[in-house]
Length: 115
Image 1 (tube, rainbow, N blue to C red):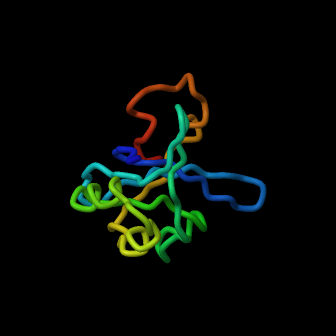
Image 2: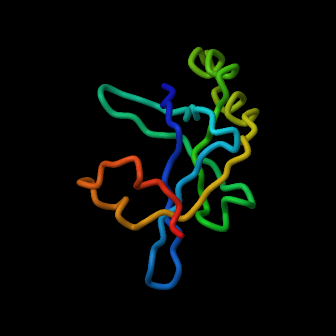
């Protein structure tokens, strides 16, 4: 499966605190996460973080572009060949408020940068 998103959250751990960050593509385009699914459940495929992202977290979701979607969705045998050919896009990120951790905070301003 492919999961569309315009961004994702990741938490940076420092000592006893965790700080949330919001990640988007540098061009602000839509992201497509390759995943696996069964019944009504899915899991996003991750990879070792790039050097830039590793400052926040050691893993990051794989992101495919729209031209790679058909190949990924129609895997015949060796999915690793396709997954290994995926180059991560350039991402940007910024710190956001810890309010993002509360599901009752459902407002677009939740992803605004912390001053």
